[in-house]
Length: 259
Image (cartoon, rainbow, N blue to C red; front, side, top):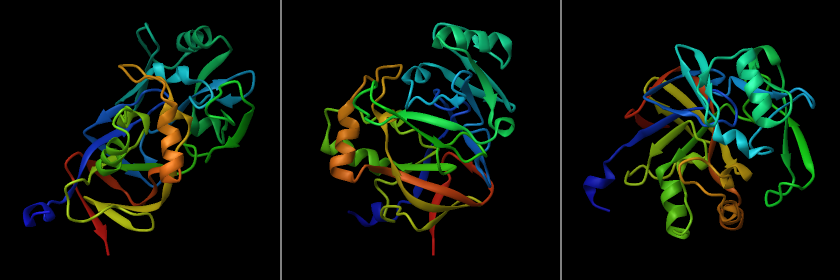
């Protein structure tokens, strides 16, 4: 590596927010980082009124066909082939009709601790179902923040160029351009600073069936995505993290390791 490339900093390449759990999210130029993670991230979910579980695409991959966005703090949802709708009776009726069971959009702050479901065997959607509880703050599964580097994806592509290692499969909040920098890989157990925000990297992100799901715009179901991650990477791609010092993160911000 040349001296010039060694001096290149790590930068925020892209930022992502997912207002409704398991629906398609949105790219953002900036994100407000609060003590509980990204403001507005997984703040809403689709409640199955029969089982009283918040539906995840781990259990029902159809949710990835819907799109959720936030404007001035207000969520809007677009179901396949439909127009954008605000939360309310009309959206709930459309969700119920689309999913084929009674459902409604709920907000995490008022719903409280959610119960989620997934199949035990990611290769078989008809396998036994397991349940777990969320954090009670938002509808995230475990940690409030997820980071991925471009180096993670480039390495996977080099190993299996026949697969579609699209960033959307991994649903990160922050993607760091860390392929051609001289700072080396970002590792769990360290802290990083992005602008005024400080983030503690907790542990590797264990992947699940979400990475294999069919998604709009050309992402087919690819079970080998998860098979490969399990076999060669201990099923960890990216990092789970916590916000230590709040603030705003922007695309292009420099990412620095904290000593």
